[in-house]
Length: 340
Ligand SMILES: O=C(O)CCC(=O)C(=O)O
Ligand SMILES: [Fe+2]
Image 1 (tube, rainbow, N blue to C red):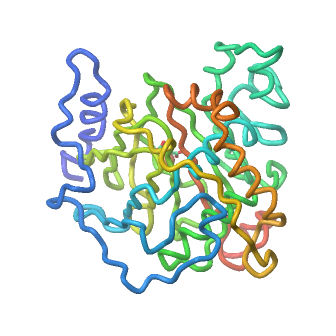
Image 2 (image 1 turned 30 degrees about the horizontal axis):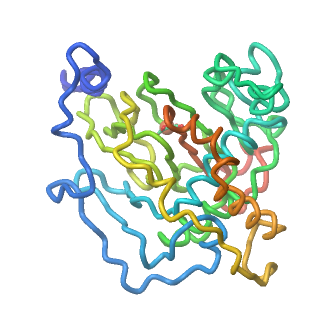
């Protein structure tokens, strides 16, 4: 082994961006305009997906897709959401996804059935409890100790998030993708996420979809060991990062949260009443489109939105969606006998 392989260049960069004294320069942080690192992909013949409007997305023709010269398999879709769409997903992550039977980091101290309602008991905000939520898990629950998914630690995966992931996967040509597990990460202005690879999934060939909302972040992506110096990428509200192929198994981290430069969840807030749908034919996972539309629209009311707004003004939420099983595999039971 080359001596340099032992050197933790990832950690050096992580510490640089995490530091407060001195504060890091953001000069080398890559944004989508950075043509020396980023290449815009021209997607002329992209097929329109009739489901986009229901899930808070703009028409696929308007999406901006980028790849990274130094990171094969890494993609960025720069905010394809509408303002109302961002509000929908932020609210879902706060109000619905931390509810039982989903799991959260707070379970280690106390089991709370409905965290968001508990935070607002008697109309007042319990800030201490509000700040405590760091993650919730959906579908197959990631076991942080064993790093294993198991069949008896699984709940149903949210239909809307499965549908959203399916739309993005299809746009990129991954037609067989199945959303089976997600970690929803909740960050405050001083939070970080240290270097790791996501390798608990049986299927590491399937891409991973990472949806970010709220405040911005520096996202580091390195190589398959920590000797590779990572790139620092600016991730903003509404951005979707896709880790596929080589990038799927690379080290990554979030060393810093940055104040958002704009507020895209306030862009063009208008309700979408004119939507009509032939439900059964359009959606793959969602059973009731009416529910999705009324939820989307309810967030155009500023008063209804205000509690979520005050949370997201000082937080970042990331929904990290994975496929766990191989194609044609229906459960993890007996997985060791079918070629894993
Ligand atoms: O917050 C992010 O952008 C990354 C989260 C992540 O890497 C994970 O949940 O495994
Ligand atoms: Fe990760």
